Image (cartoon, rainbow, N blue to C red; front, side, top):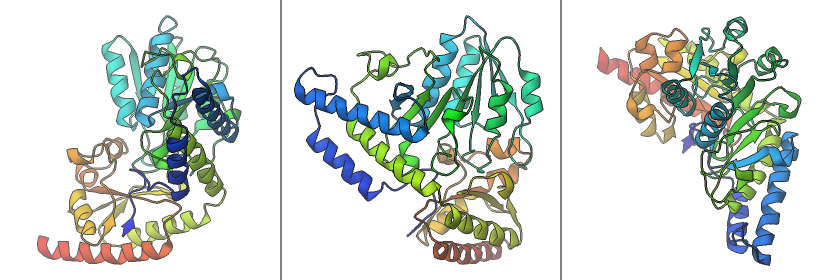
Length: 379
C-alpha cells in the first residue's frame, strides 16, 4: 500500500500507541478525583502539558487540550469573539480557510459580527496591504490558516503579527493543523495569540489536539461543566490521549529538523506531474509546505482519479477530506482563480516522513497509466 493522504489523517506511530495503551491501562483514574490515584493522573496530565509547552516555547498554562483542530478553531474564534464583543465586532479572515473556521465566521455574521474575507493570489497567499486596509478600530480578531490544507500555501504569519503588534485589542489566531511538525514556527517569539493543531495529523491519535492561548487572552468557553482545562474546556480529560500527543509532537518536531527527504519527494512529484501532458499543478513550490501537492488532470474528475488509484492500492484524496464527499469545486482553488472544471477535477497528494521516493516513482508510473487509459475511453 502507498498512503499519500496524510493531510486527511496519519497512521499512529507505534511508540505513540504503546504510550497510549500504557497510560490508559495504568493511569485510568479521573484527574479531577481527590484520591491519590486521581492525583497521580493529574500529575501526569500536568507533566504532558508542560512538555508540550516547553517544546513550543510557551507557558504551561497557555496549553489547552482539545479533541482536535475543529474544536480548537471553534473555541478560539467564538470564544474570543464573544469575550471581546464589547470592544468591537469586526473579524478578518481569508477566502481559503478550513470549514471549521469558515462556518464559524458565517455563524458569527448571523449574530451581528462583521467579517472581512481577504482574497488570495494565484499562489494561494493573502495580500498584506489588503489586510492592513481592512483593519478598523472595531477589529478584534484576525484568523488566518498557517498552511492551507488543499494546496499547501504558507501565509506570511510573521508579517501579519508585525502588522498588528501595536494594536492592543486586535488578536491573531492561526489554524496550524497542517503546519505543525512540517513548517518551523517560533510561536513564543511571534505575535500569535491563539494557535490550533490536531494530533492525528502527526501520528498521534484522533480525538486529541491543542489550542495554544496566550495568558493575556480571555475566551468564552464553548463546553461548560466541571471546569477542566482551566475552565475553558469542561469534560473529563483524555489523559492517555494527551500523553500520547506529547510524545507524537516530540517525534514530529525532531523530524522537522530534517525535511530534506520529504522535500526531495515533493519536488520529484511536482516536476514529474508538471511534465505530464494536460496536467495543471496548483501547488507553487516557492510558497508551499513540503508535504502537500495539488493538481488537476484535464477532462477528468478528481474522484475518478482517486478511485482508479485506489484499485492500485494507492491512496490520495480530492483536495480537503472534510468536503471531498460533496463533490463540489474546491473553494480554495476557485479563490485562487482556477476554473470550475479544474477545481472540480483537483486531487491532493499529502506526504509524511514515513513516505519514500520509491513510492513516489510507483505513483507516477501508475498515474501515467491511468491517465492514458482514461483518455482512451474519453476519445
